[in-house]
Length: 239
Image (cartoon, rainbow, N blue to C red; front, side, top):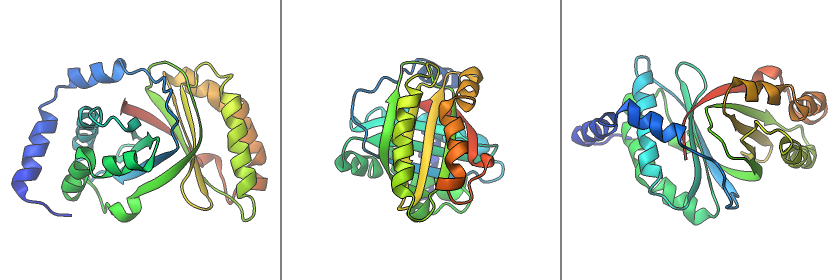
């Protein structure tokens, strides 16, 4: 989507006008302790153009100030998967909130700047509406995370969803797992998104009951699942 150059430049100046100190302060004081019922969400995966990685990161950092003005956006995570792959995951109580976000300032800015910053970004496929099947939250600083995308075998979707709901109970016994989401992306595609304060918390989860149960049941429930689907991510900033 193309827009007039002055709009792009003005927005980028606005974003880059924030200082890294401000970003760090916003991130490090964030506490997740949601009491709202998160039922739906959005998952966006995007690749930065070569040489634009820091610009994309700055864009995501600047997005926090905008999303903090959206009262119906319950949670919002900007994260980095690898050197040039980034993502956004956010949640809402009702469809009205999701639509308000999709027509809000963060979404407008993403579409306005995608042509300059992102490689082959297609909003019709790369902005995915998801259902939140289960979530579990504890208070704490969120710096590290995991994103696991998996595909159910035919006729196993109910079993996968039952497994994910059991997972919610298991992570309740993991004090270092700060947020944990089970997500449904489409009829047979699911995901787990979770966050931690540091590597020790993430490592404890990866050697815990949920991860062990996932690997044990994957051959029966999931289509072509491999351990490489468990992606370590860095949380750039979150609401």
